[in-house]
Image 1 (cartoon, helix red, strand yellow):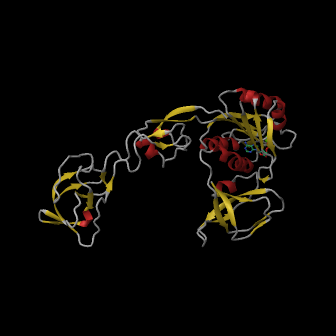
Image 2 (image 1 turned 180 degrees about the vertical axis):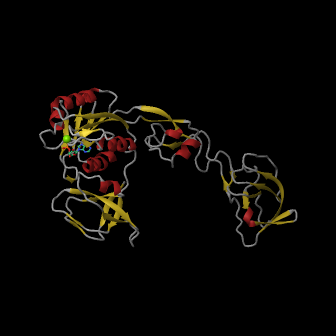
Length: 383
Ligand code: AMP
Ligand code: MG
């Protein structure tokens, strides 16, 4: 898929992937400063008393010459006077007349409570590397490099195509044999959440000419990187996606997987002149569409690889086929092992939406597992 780049303000960069190496333009921290509120002194073996000669607060540096028996009151983040080498925390000092005295039993060590210039990072070194997913935890370092804007990979654009003669927009009241197209807003939002720009192609009829025209238009549209369809990919007489994609010259990468719900899912590539465009064709059943998007496609498009989560099963489950089952689950309070506990919850019918709406996670039952008992460890995908 194409690599395009855009510049975005740092404060809007969350979810993007950094497309440049970001280098420090100052040492971090930029000057040696105090790590505590205290008194800055020149360390001298055995000395326990000082007079306070000055005060330096953060942002208000004053160069002062300290004698060995003098200290400067200093606040956290304030620049250290040149000849001070140690900061004694306020908590370890007792005022006595015009003196301060070091508290008996406290620990005094030369060099303590000082943050050296460049100790976090030197100047002109790479602070954040190209390819890093931008999360709130990376923002402080990018900001410390003075970045107002950052170059990031342009998000991919996906066209969402909803197929089905029986579907009406969800804000419409359906007629006797119609249903609301619920996969359409699900995909528009779920795909958007992966950091992808979405374009709603609307609902198209199960008519070969329509399906073919829509696919051709989107394949040739340079602004569309990915096509995500829902419905029409199974084995019914009006399931036209597969045959129309074949006719248009798309290469089938897979069709039908050993997974429940979601078996009919298909993945294709259209590759004219080496410029690949991928087509993800999800089944129409609401749970199947959600599960195939979440488990098969979203992980490869997310900026960072998904983390694996495990839990103790607090219910049981058995199956008779050799498919991977994906179940709606609900967390329960932690089990004794420290792992979360989870139960299979609600009807797992692929046509339903209620169990999904009430689920906290999806539970993965591997192909070869026939039975899960209470206490077994299962892999889960938090929702
Ligand atoms: P299909 O995959 O087209 O055979 O559809 C399977 C089932 O999912 C049928 O009951 C459809 O009515 C239903 N369905 C298809 N598309 C959607 C959609 N966008 N939203 C909700 N249900 C759908
Ligand atoms: Mg259909």
